[in-house]
Image (cartoon, rainbow, N blue to C red):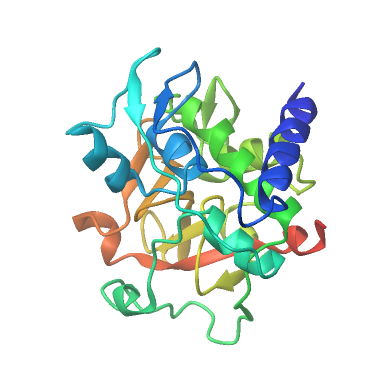
Length: 248
């Protein structure tokens, strides 16, 4: 079932990315459907969540089924696949703003990715977000890897394997070593922290964009801001699983 969902998501994303630059603009209104989130709707219409909320005068992140939202889709001219990918996601982390977080120090020799993922890898990462969001409020459970309860690494393993990525069950340090740092994260990349319950790399989550990540927190799966008081000083950096480099 999950593979079927991923195939549909990937097909839709690929079709959108290969459309001509003179494609017709999207409708001005969108009706909320089951499973929709502000991030999902904003990403589909090439908006940030803040832009979408501003267009509709929304003060909260909650939406209801059948609710009508004003959306806007900016036309773009396709030059190459990398440009299309860059325009199809919200890249909210800027080089200037990252200095507000803690400078990565865990592994200065770690390679850095300066390119965006392939179309298929991007579709898979988008699917991880779709799988992760409904798991909010799932209880925390040490070493948990199922919907009965997750720890931080078990949550990430569950989400990515159900999205279709073949990865081993590793702890946070193992995942960090099995991934490569990225300069411009996209939703579905990993975000790491250090010195939480132990010294060094000790916690991880999945980046959602807009400076937020989803993770198995102390008591439950939750969405948190990277620059919040507790996490800001423990921030290490963003990475992408090495296996995604082979997804074409």
